[in-house]
Length: 168
Image (cartoon, rainbow, N blue to C red; front, side):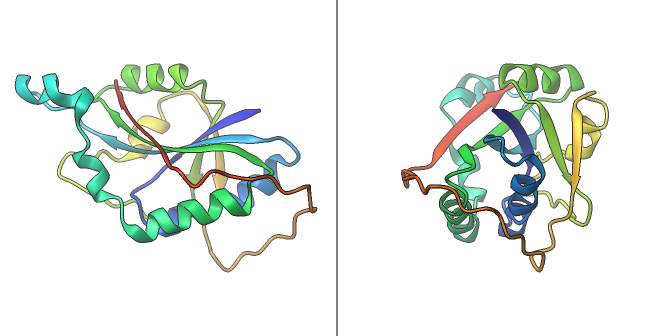
């Protein structure tokens, strides 16, 4: 089982690459981590509350949640888990620690996608990814691309979302 990190700005389009990703690694099952990178605050009070913080989840649009659940259901036989996380950090070393802690095998870069900041603290994922020395999978996120995958036995996927914060 491979663990793949996909940087996201929580637009539904950032999930369009999953069909191509699943095809590329077939028949291997995947754990997918959808992550948004944020600078770590320098306020002591905010740092103390960071572990309990959930305000970042307000940036996730209902459209993204809908596409997230749809991708989870559509590829339930090929995806073990899709989680949504936030990385808080300002150094490549902290990002590498995040990758190691989550046992990330590869990072997906969407060649035709423009990442947007969702807050003043958002960080361009390319700055960290290019220097992380982690295997990169270049994919197209064009929603017009359709793939036919072999049919496997369907499995039930719980509708609950897996969300967490990661501090680096």
